[in-house]
Amino acid sequence: MRLNVCYTTLYEYREPARHIVQLLRVTPQSFAGQSVLDWRIDVDSDVRLRAGRDGFGNVTHMLYVDRPVDRLKLTVAGSVLTQDMAGIVQGVAGELPPLVFLRPTPMTAPSPALAALAEKIAGQSAGALDRLHFLAAAINGGMRFDTESTAVDTKAAEAFEAGHGVCQDFTHIFIAAARLQGIPARYVSGHLFRRDGAHSQEAAHAWAEAWVEDLGWVGFDPANGTSPDDAYIRVATGLDYRDAAPTAGARSGGGAEELSVEVLVTRAREKGQFQSQSQVRS
Image (tube, helix red, strand yellow):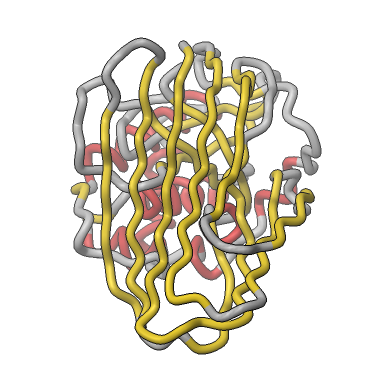
């Protein structure tokens, strides 16, 4: 499937912001089942962009703004050819050893409730692949999707105890429970083409990948109760959200910040979907 993406992020500042530095993880790479046909980053201000890769092999760009601005608009657009690989991920550049992804992080730290979930899932099957599918299904069936209940710094244990959250929370819970079973798991950020035409969804989607012997990395999307197929565009990975977030940075001045995100994901020659999200941060 050929998918087109147009991902716009607009920052508006109450006072001019100075010396803005942003780390961007917004560029996908090609591997088996995903071929990037074209991709570009456009900014409406005078900025410097420096391309690179991080320790997880993600394509990165450092963005620098050296003069005062009261708004900054970042547009990422491109086309990607995808193929359904039944969730199996192969041929990604810069791969780290799977055991790296057994390391817990503050956002995926275990709790008694998560340990009980992992123990329950482990008792359902001796095979890792079956257990991971059971885990994704259990999270999907036991959690309620709620865009208002959590924030970007919500931990897996907190979201699991609350019983609701967004795709980021579902993914962190899956990663924590998989690691408790001794299965390496990592966070993935990217884009999802919604076949149901839904308009209210997060700007970027999130899911997990877990290491299965004899198969390698396999994707699981507990928020949707499925494995990634040709509707998914994989962009960045890490131990948790903080390693794979599309943007992260700092600035001097600016006062309160209003952030607006608009994402258009379309299938070639077909009507796409529009997703939007606005929030105010201080």
